Length: 65
Image (cartoon, rainbow, N blue to C red; front, side):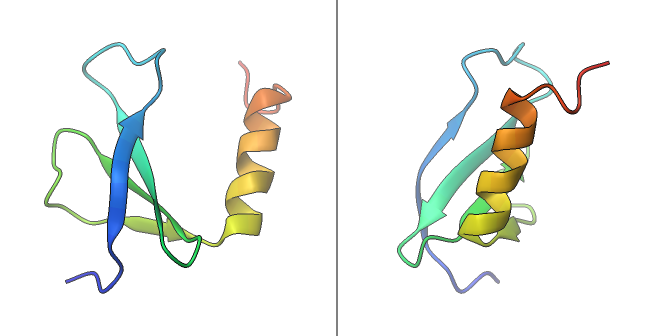
């Protein structure tokens, strides 16, 4: 079981309804991500700097096809 408590799970406004990833922050700043179809499943955790780098790369188009 995950020891951190995440609050205010959200997903992108661009989600198509079926293939969604949700994210939330813990009190210590850690960002958790999970599959929106399996909210009791595993949570992948990212430290704040790694999450920020990832979202900056997404916004910058690094992963565009």
